[in-house]
Image (cartoon, rainbow, N blue to C red; front, top):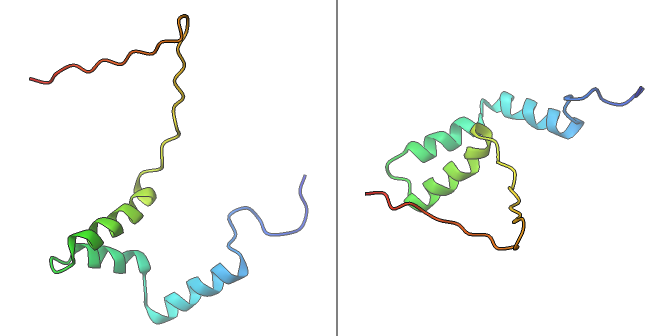
Length: 83
């Protein structure tokens, strides 16, 4: 059993100070980025970067999948044509 230190999920001092300061200023970085991405005047490259940066907060990254062939050691992939 662990004793002392921060409880799991408790932000460190620096993170807590930053969060408090942003709240004092009335700033929400997530909201700010979303507004920039929604602005039609925002350059498409920047919009894509912002959305890509926000994506992991909505959808967790998937783990890599390892493929292994049995027997001959040959791995064959086939795609069906969508017609």
